[in-house]
Length: 244
Image (cartoon, rainbow, N blue to C red; front, side, top):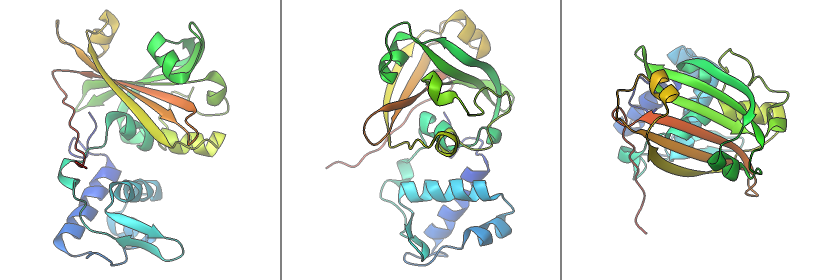
């Protein structure tokens, strides 16, 4: 599972640095956060890396943006200790170029029943699939499949073997004008197929955790399904939420 603790990409390292400065009081609540340009200069990272880090901090409640004024520090969120970037969410916002992976498949294929139902497609329909094998420390770690209606993939770089320089959300928003609003997540456990076990280097009798994230727009229309396959002996999923 991609979390901010496991071999973090550059944007996640920047998130951790800024969180530490907020916690230490170097950036106190109510203060103005340094500008994107200042962060690029100080940390020696690219603008997309800074933008991705600031997006995570905003979504987690560490900072807030005020139109025409800049970004202000809010402080440490109540659930910061337990927050994790979910596997599907990490793939949506993280540039492919920041993870070690290879393209396994890209093109129109018959959609599995569960994915077809999440996309609102008729049984035995075809959908566009982009599947990558992600590695950590040189070992295969997770198999990430992105499914969408074929017309949504047209005019994008999703058939390219080159890793996307931005996250999937940013790429589809720029190329197709679609806006991701929310994700409905399902987690199941099953035994891997022979092909999956081989690709992930799994020993016999170890199950997979299959995380399905159905991405929808503000009207509830399904846009994309992200399927992340995680060997159960190498991953655990943790969540935290307020008790109302």
